[in-house]
Image (cartoon, rainbow, N blue to C red; front, side, top):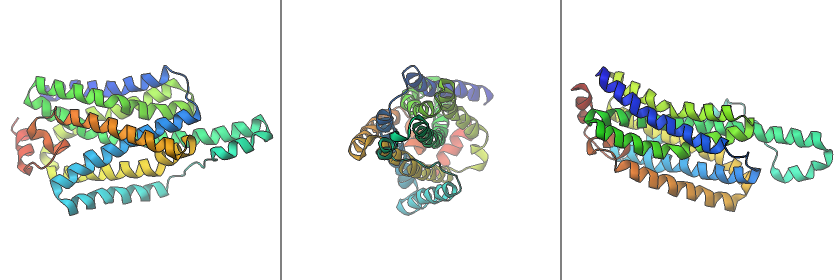
Length: 294
C-alpha cells in the first residue's frame, strides 16, 4: 500500500503543479485594469458555478437521490452563509463613485483603490478556499485510479492537470491585483492545488475504515453548496461592479462552458468503478472493497 500511495502522491503532484502553471500565466503579465479584472472574475465565477452544479451537486443527486442530495447541498449553503456572517467583509466603494471623488485629489483616489484591493483580496481568498475543497476529491480519484494501474493513474492525472490550469488563474488573478505581489499570488494558487495530494493521503489512510461512499458523496454535495454560495455572494457582485452586468454575465457563461467541457473530458478519463467521485451511482461496497483489498 505504501508504494501505491507514493505513486498516487507523485501523480497528484502533477495536478497540483498545474495550478501553479495557471498562476504563472497571471504573474508574467501586467496587473489587469478594473474592467478586465471584473471580466476575469466573471469567468472564474462561471468555473466555480459549473463545478458546483454540474459536478458536485449533480453527482450527489444521482448517487443519493433528489431529496438527500438537495439536503446535503443546502446544508453546505447554510453552513457557509452562517460562517460568512461572522467574517468581517471589506466594504467596496462602487466604481461609479470613483470618478465623482477624483476631485479630492490623489489621497482620496488612493483610499478608494485600497478599498477595491481589500475587496478583491477577500474574493481571491474565498476562491482559493473553494478550489481547494474541489481539489480534495480529485486527489482521491488519482489514488483510486493508480490502484487500477500506472497507465490509468497517469492518464487521469494528466486530465486533471489540464483541468486545473484555469483554476490557478482564478485564484492568482485577484490576489495579484490586490497585493501587487507575484509571490503571494503564486503561493496561494499553489497551495490550493496542493490540496490534491492531501486528498490522496485522506483516501489512503482514512477512507477505508471511517468514511462510507454515501457520506463522501454527501460531503462533496455540501462542498458544491459552499462553492455556489461563495461564487454568488462574493465573486459575482465584484464582477458586476467592475465590468457591468451584461459583460459579466457573458463572461460567466463562457467560464461555465469552458469548465463543463473540461469536466466532460475528465469524466471520460475515469474508469467506470471510480464514478462515485465524478459520475453517478455505484454500490457502496464497491469502492470500500477495492481499497481494502489492496
